[in-house]
Length: 456
Ligand SMILES: Cc1ncc(COP(=O)(O)O)c(C=O)c1O
Image (tube, rainbow, N blue to C red):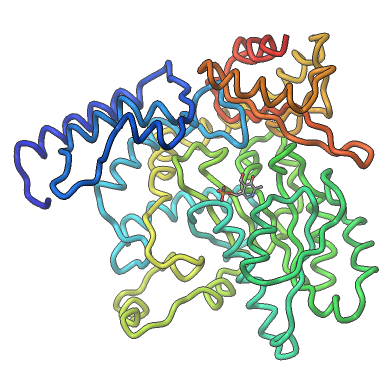
């Protein structure tokens, strides 16, 4: 398996040919899933004693398996939070994989970690956090949120009075599911402010007033959202920061989706207050055009993260030795062995410059506003709320939840688009509505018009 022979060389060329075709393809096929039994019937047994051969396995992948996936960068993929990695970033993901760099410790990964840190400096500069703020790339927003919450909890636990009590976090209903899930992972309770709209400083203050002394003692962090996943709403970050500062609470901002918009001058002011956070999550694999997977967690005081995350072990001592001195990404988040997943972002930033990133993010905002105008001009649909960041919620007049579901499946089955419904709370009740989330600057007005056209 580790030998170099003709078969390997030919396979390498085939793989490169595939990669070149995929990177330059401008008419992607939007695949749809098949049942597992059907995929098994189509590809047969692929793991056998003697192997089925690289050529054969690759052919099955190209003929069958890739067609059962949705390319996340399809211009009519407007569901969930789509993605649109730059071609440069994808190319460099290949280089990252081929280079086999261990991204945990400077001793092994210095050159790669240097690249990551250059990209990280730009991300940190977008937040406005003062020195010595810094961060690391994680597998995504979930891991970034978890890493930040662990740092916050450990900081709080330094006080001996907090050592044997369960922590409490305040966030809002609109916060991402990963915040709620990670609270379970670290076994802390959550207090949800009842709003899917922006969580205001006032709402936070009212919750604080209702806490009894024991709850107040257990409270150690507030999580605000810099762009909700459902609707692109940004919490009142300055108002929340103000309260967290006076109440000595850790302020985490989950800007996994919206963080890319920190680069967009047109909306940057909406994030004011983020520069007062203790930690921030931003996912470059969402709105900063990195391939999966690439999240980031940034800390106002990285030393606190280091105290929470640095792993100890006799086999790790050498990494901490003066001779191996340098920045060790493993000290600042939950993962030890890690790929240098910030390298594709670094290369793409270095190749294109940050102005092109600003432009590409602004495109998502322009597309959302354009979609808003097209919806207003179309008699069968109406806006549920004004577009926010790159999210648009709208209803097809007269549709039931089943109609939205059938419409989603039909568009996907026909290889036309992936647009999924969501729910929005109006006056105490949840309504099923349609949702666009724009990331890809290649999405066109024609795409939006055509999708609205499928609603009859
Ligand atoms: C606001 C927000 N936070 C966290 C996450 C989780 O990120 P990931 O899927 O990269 O773990 C998402 C994902 O959509 C998100 O939108």
